[in-house]
Image (cartoon, rainbow, N blue to C red; front, top):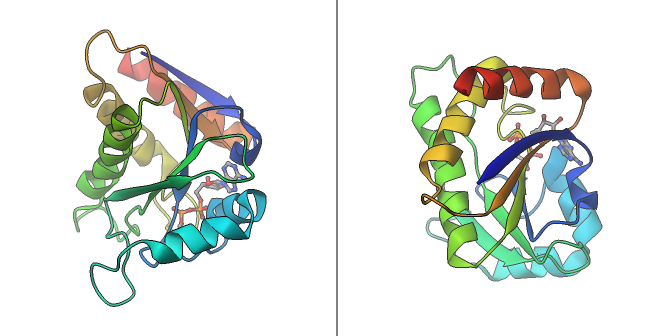
Length: 174
Ligand code: APR
């Protein structure tokens, strides 16, 4: 497995799957969620709306992941996951964030995905400090990968400052 930190618009990547930092309703939003829905086209919203609600207005609980086709994206799949809102770190945020990456990796492996790009889940609107999110995320991705798996994992940052934080965390992870 290889993990690479890049700076790009995730909707433009030529990978098998891109991960969306969504909200529990899975009906779109701002940030990367909005960008992915705009780039994928209206069928993505239809596919999300068709996913079963597990509670009123909830199609994907925090920490879980769901998969849909990518439609107009070059990515075949979109893996939608819902990160935790940051409340200071004492409400289970690290474990929920780790679960987002783990559950997304499980779906990627189940779907035979060879290359997957993650955004910095929860590091935008949800306020998770990137310096704290990156080590949690990288540890979870590494732990979710079977030995010898050849999947390419990209962490797609939306700016160089964010990429620097994630590169430092990747270097620290050794
Ligand atoms: N490509 C890659 N990364 C992007 C893009 C893009 N096109 N657009 C935004 N990002 C980055 C942000 O800069 C941030 O670093 O994705 C990271 C996650 O930020 P958000 O999109 O705000 O996601 P999150 O913090 O998980 O909040 C999720 O925001 O958009 C709503 O519906 C979404 O309610 C949910 C919440």
